[in-house]
Length: 293
Image (cartoon, rainbow, N blue to C red; front, side, top):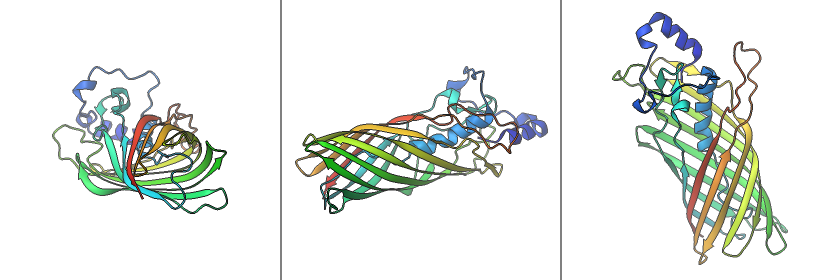
């Protein structure tokens, strides 16, 4: 995930280091004709932030007023293909598929209603525990409100944010077997969602849609380079799922989540940077298991 300028300098000064380790699974992968080094690096940076964003996994009104839940969320992180892992003009693969799932503790609470409006808040946390070679800490939060309309229909909206940091060997050395150095990745997301649901008793099917912003920072430890994300994600998100309560005690949620990406216009003041079509996209599933309070 090094910048194109840095890569060019290394190729000129140290030709033997211009090529890195390629995963054997990706050895025969052919880069697409529209491959762009900067856009590839920015896609990778956006992807991590999008995969750990804080989607609803609940309906417009997550609880009855005065009730809440505490439990665990499981966010699945889809593995990237070889075409998305290759960098440096296809001469190196990044080790992006370290963690298949991101578990985090989550709590939500619905406050006493104000007229028909039910306000609520939620928070989630991944403590800084080293797992599969990286140490991750992620903090998320949400503020929202829902309104019942009739006996079944519900509408609502929410604001959400996520702040995350990963420390570990992410970019990997140029040459296999070289001393690894820890990298630092910082990603943040925030956005707004509108939610529509149908209260069917024990379950509430819902759909949500909104817009989200992602910002990233990446420090590469082995050559002390900070990469700039020139195609940050600012685009749509959507969710479709079901929120349920079993015997008034056990809450569950299952959701299909997507951030389909869009079209980015890079900073005009920076020359030779092309617009990138799919500057960030993720489609994944998320599960919630909790105890109702």
